[in-house]
Length: 267
Image (cartoon, rainbow, N blue to C red; front, side, top):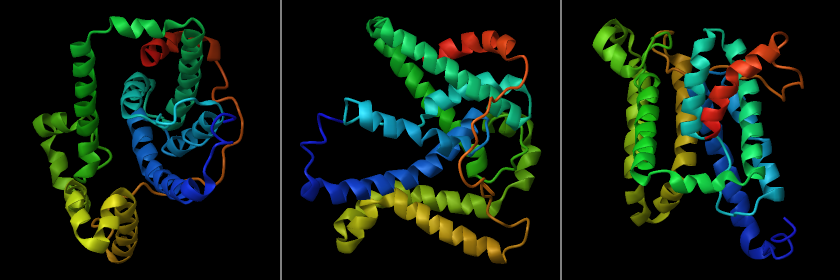
């Protein structure tokens, strides 16, 4: 921060930076909730995890183009590791906190040992295939809530289509319609750039969509029947969490049990 702050152009960049920060902050709220769902932890853990990293990176980071926030690939890997710890979301969240600490310590150790050169030995086709497959898995994992399937449906969308078709009888039509409209808007928003004032809608399409769907869902659910309401996240705790140990017992045994998973996520 001592390098770029003295040369910062307040008149030229401050307004645009504030606008960008507000836009990214609003988008990050929805994105972090989705990534917390991928991790199989309490949804509020997503926004909590996005608070301190950008602040610390602004103070100590060296790359102005780095994206600091939650990631779909890491969330997917974390969720796969936490899936074996039962259906109690509070326990999985506590285990996830310990796993996160281990991953951070391993990455710090890798940085101190200057192990970044190991990336050179990764095959480019293998890495490309891994990233592509991860993107497909992330999209498949989000299809069930996107098309309005009940939250109690077990397995992914492929398992539901093949073996549990009875869940389609409980499909939420309102959620499905809203999802399709949102997807259609995002795919065609670029064409609005040629329509005068609507170009601002295209520039801030994610923020615009977030605001419109929020207002529409609130008004629609107020007059819809209980079964016909659009599925929402629900109540979220206000304020900040208190500092406490996530696990009260057997933390040493769990530490060694999670260590291989932490190494996998760190790599």
